[in-house]
Length: 130
Image 1: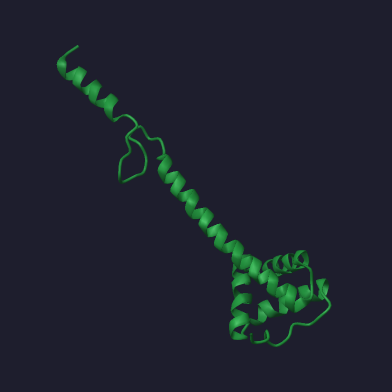
Image 2 (image 1 turned 180 degrees about the horizontal axis):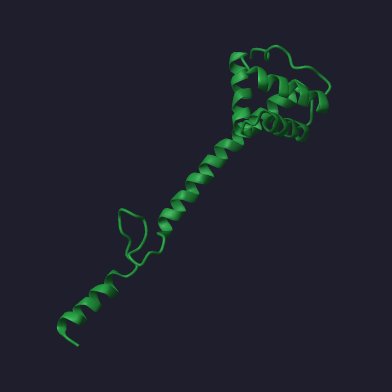
C-alpha cells in the first residue's frame, strides 16, 4: 500500500457520514436527520394552526346551528366533501364569514343542507356582531 492510498482511505474515513450543505444528505447518501426533524417540526406547526382553525369553525357551527361539537365536526366534513373544498379551507371561509358576513353561495348551501340533517335551525344571514 502506498502513502497516497493510505491518505485516501484516511480522508474517506474522516468524511464518511458528513453532510453536504447543498443536498441535506451525507456523502454516503443517507438523509440528514436534522433536515428530517426540521421538516417534522414544520409539519407539526402547520397541523397545530390548522387544528385551531377547524376547532374555531366547529365552535361557530355549534353556536349557529345549535348542534353538538361532534355534529359540528360532521357538518364541516360533509360541507368539505360535498363542495370538494379542503376541510381547512371550509373552516377558514366560515371564520371569514364571522368577520365579513360573506360566505360563498356553494359553501352556504352545503352548510345549510348539512345543518338541516344534523341541527334544528336555519343559518342566519350573518353572525351577530360582538
